[in-house]
Length: 503
Image (cartoon, rainbow, N blue to C red; front, side, top):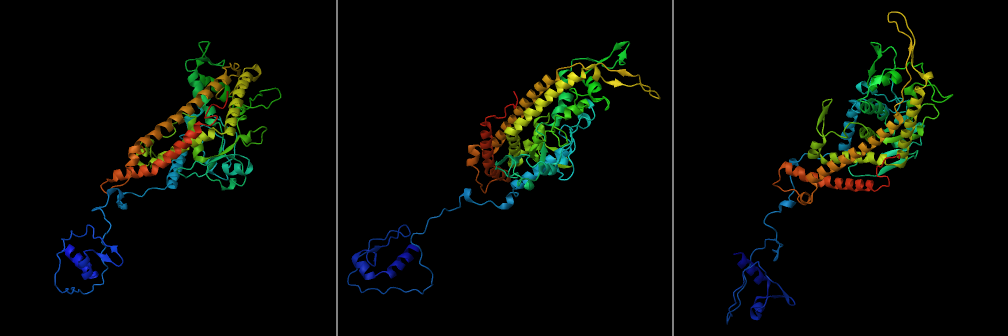
């Protein structure tokens, strides 16, 4: 019926007599109209002989447009790859800024729990008014349990950026970006300082590193050695007792009365052993020299993470943890649930590497390491002199004390051991961060960014929520991962490439 109606419409529109006599379908000056596949082939017209023309039937106008003779073809059903997926199937994705804020909260909780080997929290840095406190180990992490092993005072970030306007700035220019690696390379522009937020006054060489030298490295190094007590009253059956490194070191270095000071050179300032160590460490105290020019202003998250480079702590936990009732996702589940946040952690680790590879930072790290090495040698030399022996004055009363003088300190070559310790510490930091970057960037790649996964990352109506999330993660995380890999490869091409800053 459709073919007959269409043919009737065409016949009404044409000059029937002319068309029938010529055997052709023409309109105007020879324009051909082809019906194409819309109608069945016409039977061969029979000649009309001696018949009067038949008047065409008329139909009432319906004001409908004429049908297209060749309408565009359409598939019978939409292609699955282009079908939009209902938004209700997926939870809303968090922005990069939200992920960065969550990482900042993670680091703050880490500080508050004193996970940085028990060292003094960095909360004074965030206070823009209060004076920075000296760094001092806490609790069981005090070196050999010694008290008062503290650095000299330093200023909070808010004060330091004003009082020390030439302090260089390091960190990502866009802290809450997923894929920007623009970097402050030690800028000293004074007009930049007022705009900075969430930075720390940074000691390039951590005070915890110095404490761990005595409390961990030397304890392990001398584990099998017994030291004769320097106290002449510490005897058993007339024979001087012996003990491990820690008790001996504490008696000679940590428990020395505050009034029994000594100078390292003739005419030099008289100080306790711990004060002599702190004096070669940067501070803001009115001393000459105070090495304040070695302070930097470092992005807060990178500064906290940097502490874990040079300690026994892992960079980020692999398993989930709970702190103050809040779940902190470990790397394993973070790759599964929010790969972009896992890449933000990769970006942070790479940021610490970039910072430690800056020329000024490397120079400061070398200089403070060398000063401490020289200071340890000088301390051993001074403590070995009879004039600098520890003295316990006699006392009477409920707890009488026999007055006595301790034996001189027996030098152990602490300067050389410090050099060996720092060499090993730098090598471990290099291995730790490179291993982390390699392992977890590969995990993200294998989970989301292989060629096959990227090719099959378009949503389909039949996809489960789990599949939809995986595909969205592929689309969102893989460009971030590619930006990270590019920056990481560039960092390997620098002249220093995280090599040791000292010979």
